Image 1 (tube, rainbow, N blue to C red):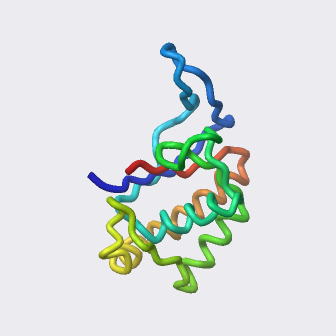
Image 2 (tube, rainbow, N blue to C red):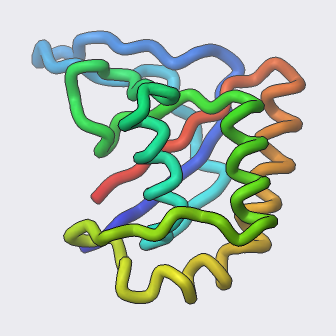
Length: 136
């Protein structure tokens, strides 16, 4: 078990609807474009924005786990700057986050993270919606 992270785009905004059992479900999710595994610093970056209210999970009364957040150009710019200046936040840990090797993961994922920023900026500029999602 561990932290799995995803980013994807969709041509239309996702919606929250009740499924056939009456549970809330997110509709409109497309296949993931980017995947990470136990990238604790990336998770901490997004969790900090959720905690501050800058990002809001799709299902407002649920936690961030399996609950995508819509990204905008400002968030992507902040992420890219943190990556380039090596100021990504450190994770104090999460049960499955891999915080013990977060510096190594950040180094290993840096090229992919920067590629994600360029891709996300292009998708958003083209009118698509870009989301980050995680599962632990």
